[in-house]
Length: 67
Image (tube, rainbow, N blue to C red; front, side, top):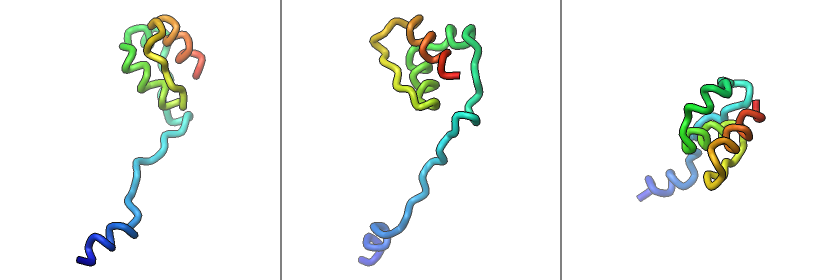
């Protein structure tokens, strides 16, 4: 009975935040080889939300500027 009360007040560990300095910078050639979903995941590491409706070339250009 008290187990569920304990779960309410217990702080659960979360994934550590990734700082921009810790993210490996990729070259434009490597970004060109990535898919749109991979570019979206890579852009999120920098705090950038990728709109996958855009063309791949525009996404690569925007993500390359994040370096």
